[in-house]
Image (cartoon, rainbow, N blue to C red):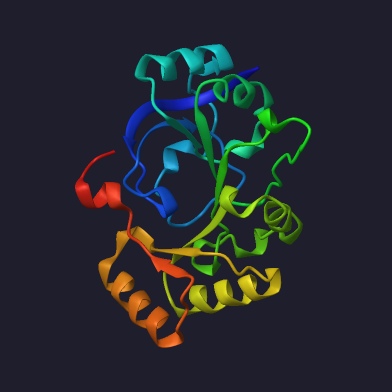
Length: 217
């Protein structure tokens, strides 16, 4: 199978639980959402980018030889990743960054079809895509072991924060939650920090996009 790949490059993971970790990103083109504040607009459409086989992707990754490979986009789960996951997991830990609208494959008899970790980022009202929330897909992520999945939310305002809390309550999500200020806005980050402390949300973590703070890709 061929995959539309915008770029393959080493960088620091700038978000979520593994913030600061050196990884290799495989960035896919194509997405099933159109978020207003998308920071990778060039990935929305899969046309006019190289179509690479799983072997070609693995060869590019092998040339860098990381410990962790992150499949990102766009939206990686719009593609059948079985062949690529099976190939990559022979040598690497594989993380997938997803908007949570598509349920992961959960095959306990073939863990090669399951990524080692999923960073799930449901879209809130400021994105313009809140109506695309898929509760069954999000619950499918809940079926994975705790160490294999986190939720991360991009927050722009109090409406986003309130709807996020409502969603977490509906899903009965008790694990850690990562809050990211939209556009890496530090005023929003400070407001979120104050709000989290006021609400005593001890499982919430407010984090910027660290790679942007450092000025790296």
